[in-house]
Length: 298
Image (cartoon, rainbow, N blue to C red):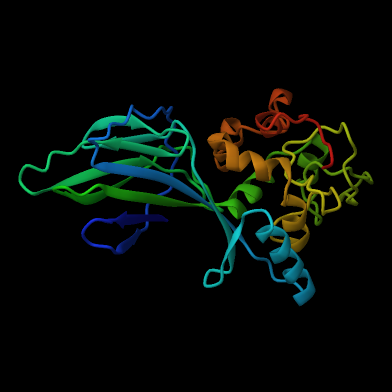
């Protein structure tokens, strides 16, 4: 989902919101904002809105999760029943009328648009990410929005893309496991949980027991090492309350705010930033925030 928010402070004094559905995909790019000028009359801010569904649980569990998340900058969308946090990334590609710009540390680019005729329609192209729970590939994606820049009006635009943290967490658990867990997929009635210690009984099935990760353990991603959980990986949809509690203030939580690198984890395993294999990809998001790449508790 892409949202276009326009702000015309000098003449209109209103906010206009458009929403369009875009196809899934991943546009890889590099980015640096071109130097702005005090004559620039178009400012574009590229926003990624991290969204995490508020899980169904007991009233006490939901109240605790809301208290935790809102204490760390997440907001609540009551209508969508989600936590959300708006973030911006440096070096995001933005095209304005065919010219290439790269976002600065505030996620913004700016340029001067000729308004000799009183107004000028402008096409803005931004890169998009495949953030659905079901990902079909590693294709590039982009979204185009049109705005009208008027004479003597500094036109401010926010382009907001929804990023599904639910989708990220789910994809991280698919085909991204240890050898024992991969074996378990062959006819077992109990699905092994990635990166958890396992007790196995040789035979047609495996008996799986979840145990907390220990300091120094290999991990795909430190997405369950938050300070309020039990350091155990849980499937996001089978155990949503426990997964949300373990994710809060985890390395993955903070890395998503800091870097777009983690958005690669939506795609096929071979393209992911963090992965079980090769070992060099273990816990890479922890490196973004200068933490150890093996398991550790906050």
